Every structure is written in structure tokens, then in C-alpha cells.
Image 1 (cartoon, rainbow, N blue to C red):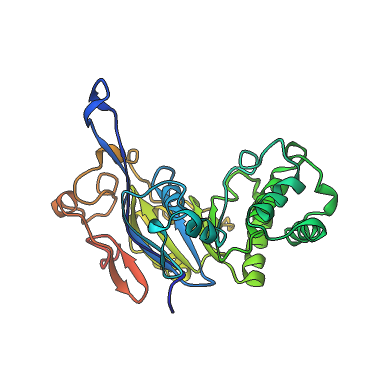
Image 2: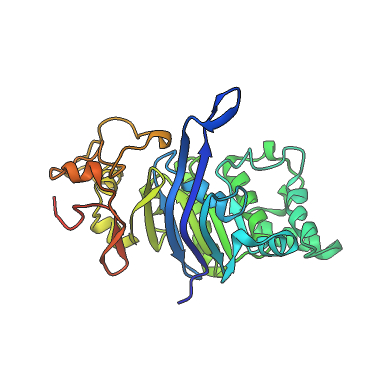
Length: 328
């Protein structure tokens, strides 16, 4: 199947401060994203998972053309996103939307819910007059909100209601791909489940494609078809969700999974504890970026000097570890 979104060797560098009075070469360069590649098929949900600062939100913002890329390619429905300009870019942006992490900060506090949902309809000239108001009512109903909230301001809504408004705003322009940038991390646990169920229902009803960004593997377990795990700007493992949860092959993925709570008091699991803090992208370690914290018993000098490639271990299952074939 031809992918809806194809990302190839994507890179994003941020130059550090200049050496003298803002002149000369930067003292260092922050490699926020280093050679990230993946593809998403129509109707599929790919979860991009990793701890804070690993570069997953930067990848999303490059795909949406909110920030420029340093290198690589982004193809959406066969078109080069990074080469589009002007009207072509604006027209294609209607097909890509985002649900932001902060349901309060992403809404204009001076605009009512009705005004917030009208805005994308006006910008893209989708509906006017009575048809526009009917579209607003339909969007609110679709995300589980009553029409009586149309004249409410963001500060009058709960966190879950605000996020539903953010989802409705993304759906207003009939997108094909929705980037969900940690859409439930700021919500209570009970509300998280409601929003995740809503996103799953919308995906089935509208045949949406999701790039779902999260730092918690427990959150994406039941919504993702595939999971890609990022560490220090690189994808270190990618697999279908059932395979990754049952047979993780990278030590970092094992550590993340060992931290996921299990609702069984009798469950006996070995907790994988990582030593130290994640390295800085401005001063990444040589060889495997994970080697300073890796608990693998076979870790050796090869890990410290040679960067592992993301290789296929089984059908649709890739990992970037020299010992991914070994069992612990």
C-alpha cells in the first residue's frame, strides 16, 4: 500500500551561541532530530514514543511545516511537503491538522468556542452563514459536547472539554492526517481514557490517519497500529504494537515497558532501571547514543564506537541495537 506520509532521513539542527560577539561559527550544534525515517499508511495510527527532549514533537512540527528541516524529505500523498510554497502549501495544509498538548494554551482565550470553530471554516472558505453555524453544531456533537457550550470561553471549560474543542477545530477542515501531540498528557487519567476512545471512534468514522506522539507506552497501547520508539533524536525500535509489547528488542524499549503499571497486585516483573540522565543532544555520546545508560550485559567497546543501524529483525520489526538478536 502506498503510504499517506513518508518521512526519510529527517534532520533538524539548532546552532548554539556564536563564539565571539555573535560572530563566527557556533560553539556547538544541537542535533534535535538525527536521520528519522518512517511511513504511515492511510487509515493507520503510528505512535511516536519517547521521553521528553528526544525530538518527537520536533518531527511533528517539521511535517506540518511549522519549523524548517535541516535535511531529509517529507512526502504527503506523493507530494514533497518541504518544497511547497504559497497557495500550494496552504491548500495542502487543510489535509494535515494537529491537536496540541496543552488544551488551554492552544485556544485563544478571547474567542468563544463558536468563534474558534468558525475560524478554520472561514479561512478555507468551507461554509458561510447558516451552513457555518450548522457545521459548528455538528462538530460539537461529534466530539461529545452540547451546543450550549458554543458561546463559552476556554476558561469556562474543563480540561477535557477544552481538548475536545481542540479536536473539533482540527476536524473542521476535513483532514486526512491528524498529528496528536501528546493530546492526553495534561488530562486526568479518567479523562484520558475518554479522549482516547473519542479519537479511536473518530478514526473509524472518518477514516483518519494519526501520528500519535506520547511519552507513555501505556497510553498508546490500544490506539496504535505501530509504535516507533525514539531516543536522543533517533528511532531505536519500530514494530507493530502487539509485537513491540510482547517482544521488545531494544534495551531502551524494555526499560520503558518495565515502567508501565500493571493492574494486577500479584504480577511479578523485573524493573529495568536506567542509570544517569539522558545525554544532551548538543554533546551526544559516540557510537550508540544509548550506551552510557544501557543495562545490556553484553555491552562492549563496539557500542561505544559504532553507531548501530536500524535493521529489520523480523517482518515489520526494526531495531537499532548491536545485540537486538540476543535474548536477555
